[in-house]
Amino acid sequence: MNKDKTPTACSFQELLLRLQHYWAGRGCVVAQPYDMAMGAGTFHPSTFLRAIGPEPWSSAYVQPCRRPTDGRYGDNPFRLQHYYQYQVVIKPSPHDIQALYLDSLRAIGIDTSVHDIRFVEDNWESPTLGAWGLGWEVWLNGMEVTQFTYFQQVGGLECRPVTGEITYGLERLAMYLQNVESIFDIVWTDGPLGRITYGDVYHQNEVEQSRYNFEAADTTALFAAFDHAESETQ
Image (cartoon, rainbow, N blue to C red; front, side, top):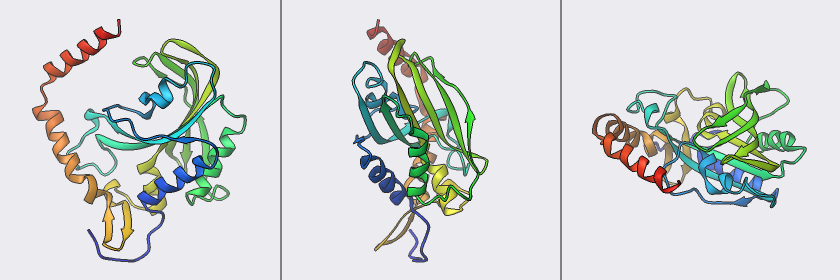
């Protein structure tokens, strides 16, 4: 914790609040994170299950994501085994979804008139979810910060109507907004108790979870649990 009160750009905490406020104001149900380990926000029922069927649906939420093989014991400034995504899903996908997204960037403090923002074709698929879609990566000054996907199929079922998904990389956006070179230097909040960084909140977690993932986890038991869960779906 740092008592330095020099003002910072949009804190990580403020970034989340601004996105919540922006998308809530456009009719999205602000859902809560799903309390299970998952590798991406797409696994959340508000996206995966709601993309199936004809009923209109709009939701936005933060989702903690875990990818054990990306752990680096807290030594890598740009790679984590636990990180956050901000997920927006709208069905049917509105015709102006890209304009809505660009407006959301302005809402968090990014001037889209002076920065290089590119939509780079990158179609998406997830064999685990039986899902695929047409999509684009969004690059901000050469760094990927968002994934756009128009779901065509989920769970092996056709999406009718097509669902639009926006997935923000929150840590990358925060690094850009705050002009820092390490995730752990991101300012989480500047409050009355002083400045708290991302490292204050999560660095030790990265160290210990990496140690568990790579050194202590009973992988045989984990694969057995996976096989059991898979068998229940058949």
